[in-house]
Length: 342
Image 1 (tube, rainbow, N blue to C red):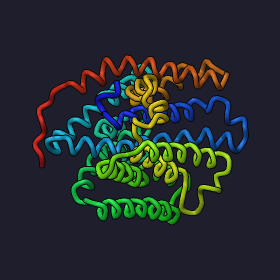
Image 2 (tube, helix red, strand yellow):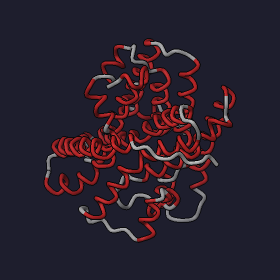
Image 3 (cartoon, one colour):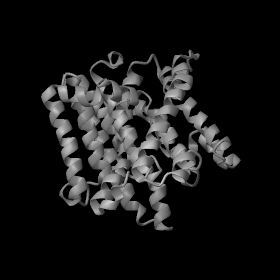
Image 4 (cartoon, rainbow, N blue to C red):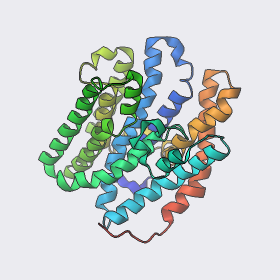
């Protein structure tokens, strides 16, 4: 199952952990919220699974673009990967799930334009705000790869996207309007995540420049686990006026993607085992399906917080296995006439 991606097969395993971090958050945290501040921080860290996905996506999109015959070929591959299952879960939520959507709402979702209106960004599947952001950066990453070349170009890209994130975050405080609405609009917009995708591009270029070693891979994994543990227990040791959860996790994820290697026994044990690889393979389905299944089946019927997480995870795995073989795999093999490059 790992041979297709060679020395970056571990990234598939990373996707599994990122997906289940989000499941852990949305299903209530398996009782950890009862442990006070550190328990709440641990549960809330599940949101960082999205940041890991965005860093991985920056790397994967860079790989996909540079292995494609042109922009049209690349874009078709990316849309085949993301659109069919997304549209399937929109249909399920609107029919079986009983969700309501206006013509405007549905149109914005089907064209991935909901990223530009926070009022409809996350109203059907309830996790879909990230999908529109993915597509937004599918369009932009090739431009970054084309015009930000070499070490200097990559450094400039990282600095500019970091400044964009922090500048926009600061500027939001001075805009008129309700503070909570502004926070949601910012969170569901593409702006904060440009830095994540830029880190993915940087990881792609770094891996092309040198061969990752097991020692660096192990250090990156130790740093990832250690600093997140410190963040949960004593967050002020690793965050401050500039560093926050998004930046911390995104940079640590960059370290894993840039320096990871299957030749590391630790990486192989954690990320390249059969379970992690399979769950990573169906992780997109797990991400899309888990919250609807939690709302429809688990939340109304289960009281125990551990059982809530376990049943949500189990149902998501079952549903995602079915949709992987029924939808994702057939569409990935579907031949579509290439778009003409603009």
